[in-house]
Image (cartoon, rainbow, N blue to C red; front, side, top):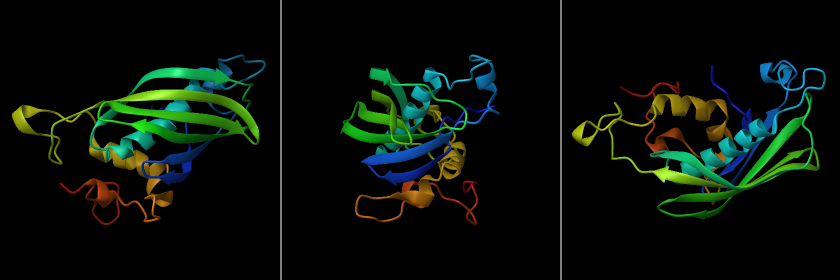
Length: 188
């Protein structure tokens, strides 16, 4: 089972900022283990949703070519409870990007109420240039499967709402994702 802590992006501007939403539903299994008589979205999972929002924004900055990992939360503050029926809106803004990684400021709201705020640093794990099979020089292996990444990016609507700073639509082919017939499958 995969855990997605955001449902979709509503805004995604390359190298700048992104907004994503997560609807909290009583049917989510983790809510039944976290205070069964008074279900709450655990703060750790809200932090993960913030990290996924910021992490995909940072990963796009590096053209989805390298693995970007959460290195640290410099700051993470929560301002209330998130209950079933609430919709979390995450807004991530890149503060600084370099060869080593990027820092992102992320806030989470439920309606107009600030639920959480964080400053997150993502480390950039550079990889060798690899072909579409995941093989490269000296038998290096890709750290992630490009087809899985493309599938996830489509599920969360990055290519539906994503733009460059000048307003051009982001397309899978811009990142070396060669697809056939508009499917989620990479060209062999």
